[in-house]
Image 1 (tube, rainbow, N blue to C red):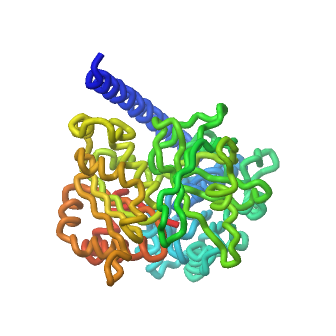
Image 2 (tube, helix red, strand yellow; image 1 turned 90 degrees about the horizontal axis):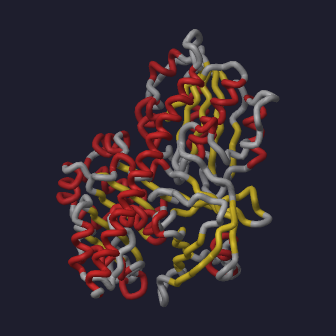
Image 3 (cartoon, rainbow, N blue to C red; image 1 turned 90 degrees about the vertical axis):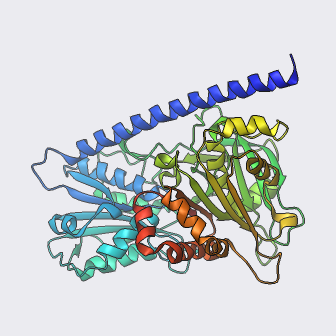
Length: 482
């Protein structure tokens, strides 16, 4: 059998496998949506009493998961509930409510997460009077940022200004601190309610947000330095094999959470760079070095201490706000920097019918396989082209075979004037506007300081605040930033 025939048969088999995987994912997602609807109906009660509002502002899914668990606790105690993201809440909803439980994460330096940006702008800007409302706030944050739990604190202050009365004092949670979460649960959980989920590790009654798996030992199978000779910190691409006890069925855009031995209270989230059909979970990790020369606890373990064949405790975390979902067949504008390439790469791999591109295959074969996918535009920034073009062979292959209709690599140090991805967006404002008019969705992944804020500012300058807010409400502007 000729090499070309073998390759053709292999490509055909891969396409069949990909179609089967897509079908399975679609069916599973429909089942999850159906389960969510049933759970919501069960929690809402018989309609004879006004349900308590359980509201969430979530960036990575943790606040949403805790919201559903809180709703189950309240339901078990005899209180009907209605679970809503904050962006679906208006003034009328709040004015008619008697009780509201708010679980709010904070994005960046004290800002509202993407799922609450419209609420922060439209509703919190109103001078509402809510004297009949009693409320409780659980604020999720990270003390590594200056404005710890900033958005949760803002909601608490705003509700107080409306005349609403707190049922309990606000509880601030640092990086999923189990003690703080247990304190929240103690207020609303009845003695008969299972308290095994007080750390937010599971979702309620089969409902809602996609199941978060338990921690299990994933085995390191490879580690490759991606930016040898870089003036910046080393970036490694790591691959892990799944344990036998785990069904490795994550979706592009999802996260993996790492638990360090002896530091179980502080969990680290990483964007997954691969797709389930690859058979291994891949990450891109930048090695953090402290001023005294020691390495960061998590990045040091992953990039240095952990040996090939060793295991680390990890669990998959659905990241609904960064998945493709309804954008699967839209043109995509993918924007990021540094290790943010991980989340963008997973989407590109998911939209390539061949999965991983084999650069040894003829370009024509790859182009044929990619012909059915929607347009993709990658805008990505790093330091220098010579040392920091991450995954260069793969990206250039995607460009050559037509999977990437447009590629803009922005290397900030390759010219006297520092240039970043937001500058490239402004330079190609007309092109970006045209893509959005054609229905494109925008995905941003990478650092919140500098890149993500600069990109958001550029998008608002090009499209206008109203259009950017509308894209966010429609799920066409999504971010995975840190």
